[in-house]
Length: 197
Image (cartoon, rainbow, N blue to C red; front, side):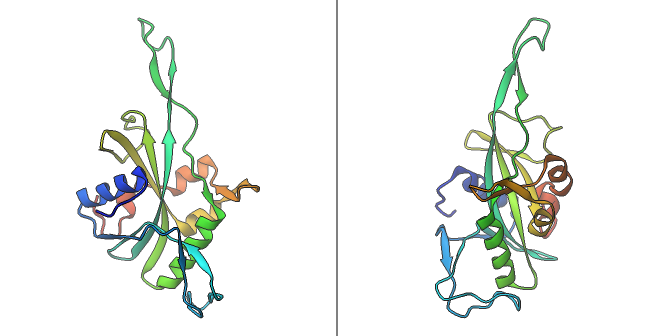
């Protein structure tokens, strides 16, 4: 297993290994320099010294291989009173599923998809760290790793780009509105190239 800085990437790598999904983890370097004149498909050529953000995993299979950028998000729980006859507090989900990324994430992943060419497609994997095991109704894909609970949602880059909206101009972040994210995201096992899960 590659040495990874964030527990999200470690957890996702554990998920891939446990399901015997063929993959390669990408070097941790934050930016990757493209060689001068490197072509990213017919539509784009690198400028000298151009750098793009690395993604996290290549997952191999049919009908296409996936270039994955893992986005870790936290789902905290809040307590509410009076949910039981004896007045015990019960956990309740707080907020919504965050689906934000940076403009650099989108631009870089698109460039990598062009660089790899035919047979490769880019996607975001949103890995939600939950304070406790989430209910089955909230997620279809939940797993535990090193005492933490995680839930997965994945979305193809082309679908994300078609629905994304600005979240913060200052921070150059984007997101997909909640209803749209629900419709375009899916469990990772449904998008894994060879259908394993």
